[in-house]
Image (cartoon, rainbow, N blue to C red; front, top):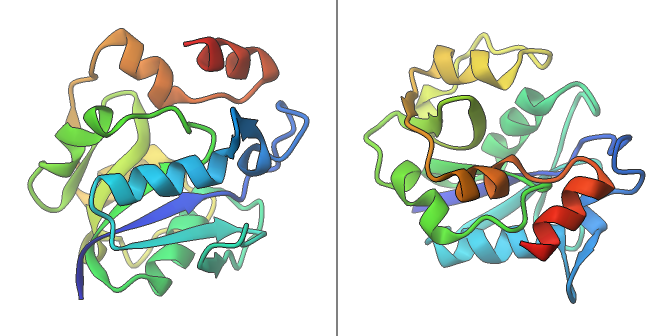
Length: 175
């Protein structure tokens, strides 16, 4: 059993972006690869994508594609061999290890930032048995008993919010 695993949520429709956010190039790397590198840099021994495609990484098939991120978290949890999991959104590939530090040192069952449920760190045991695919992530954070931490700096919040549109992507890429 590993100390930390990571799930990268890749199942969104990317309608506002106009292209699959996971496959978008950020410099010379795809967003999904940057997120996987980040997860490994903060100590994740196992990295799993959850969504429609595997992107060449270990993958968890979401039973309810486009049913919301809670289903992706559930699918990823079924694949990991860890007690703690870092959940990342693929649309935030510019997040830094420093941005994640407060979440990673939070006590069990885990934490997310106030006003921003992703990224989050949670213990596998905290995932509520009754969680529904259509739940907002905020409801999952509350039902799992995760702590809401004060948001980091405004610059970090921009990175953590990620990019859902080409304009947001351009802003972060210039960052």
